Length: 189
Image 1 (tube, rainbow, N blue to C red):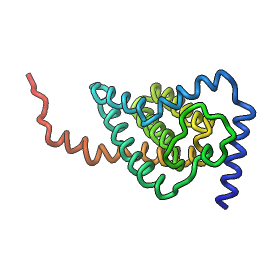
Image 2 (cartoon, rainbow, N blue to C red; image 1 turned 180 degrees about the vertical axis):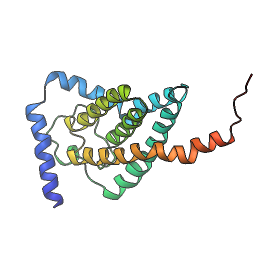
Image 3 (tube, helix red, strand yellow; image 1 turned 135 degrees about the horizontal axis):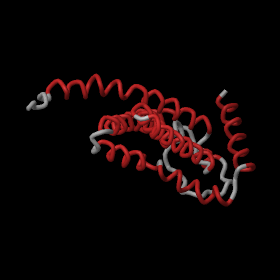
């Protein structure tokens, strides 16, 4: 079963290499993938939102969600599954970025991107659509660059969706409701 999934994964990756590879994407995809490296784009955006009065909850939710994703996806699942990356198995595809040293499943770039995009979408639909498009580009870049299998992306997207949907509910119940319960009421004139 696992061998069949890996075979289908490789067929999709090779199709991308044969039909979509071009000089333009070779130049753009490393930049796009680096937006998701260590979640840096989303972390900066999360902190920016956290210091904004209008988007404070959104920023905090992004940061909390990414922390949960890091623990579950990168620290637990990657080390439990220990799936090799496509570029470790098949070294025939020229690499445009450094070969990652951690395991492949689930895609951490995709997990962090989906968490952040869904949290933003929950807060503001217009900005959220842009965030979702960026998340999709980051996820695709991982396959284009031959560092993740499609099922790694799918696993990251599913994990990111679960965390992105649950995090605002968790923070509302365990964080924001307690903060507002101990905050003094605003002064009245």
